[in-house]
Amino acid sequence: MTTIRVVLADDHAVVRKGIRDFLEEEGDIEVLAEASDGETVKQLILEHRPDLAILDIRMPGATGIEVTSWVRERDLPVKVLILTAFDDTPFVTAALQAGANGYVLKNADADQIAAAVRSVFHGYAALDPGITARVFAHGAAAPAKAESLIEPLTERELAVLVLAARGLTNRGIGVQLAISDRTVQNHLANVYAKLMVGSRTEAVTKAIQLGLFQLPENSE
Image (tube, rainbow, N blue to C red; front, side, top):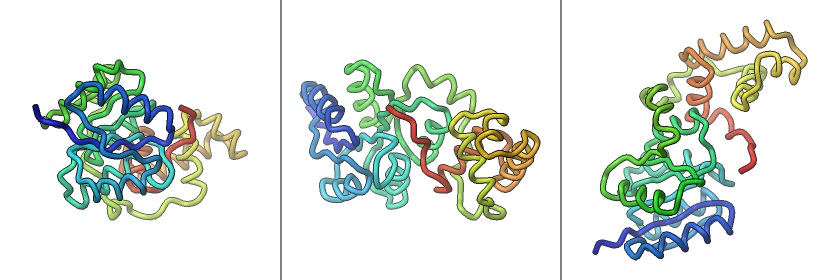
């Protein structure tokens, strides 16, 4: 029986222990090392050369999306499975565009997570059933390139986009920034033009890929 060699990264020690325990109970999965932040897991990947990296989205140092991009930029022979509480379409799309092989939510059953690890290891994509339909409906564009940005976003445009990523309406953004709904709409129009996108979701996805801002600080 082939053993799947895994490196695990999550900033919650209790969560890491739980994941490690049920994965190693499977018998064909070995967790080589654990990390609590994105920079450490990069070093572990280089040191251990695992078959697969299991990454949370929001971690100190570097996000799971940033680590995935780092792996792909270096053409490392490592599969990536995102295991997170974030089910927002922009994050899912950004992770897949960065090169993740699978995306599973933390509330999945242990058997489902183990099955996703095996699927990814064997070269198949693994998407949580709860987000598959939304991802296919949204579609996945080609990975964003820094040079695709026509001109930099202004400080105010970036502030508007960050609040949009947190789910605020135009009115809510206006209240936060003390500007009118119309001004918010104008800023978003400028953002869309500069990023060459047509919607909030696309704008947030591309901005995350380009590293224009960190992921929203939602609690897990």
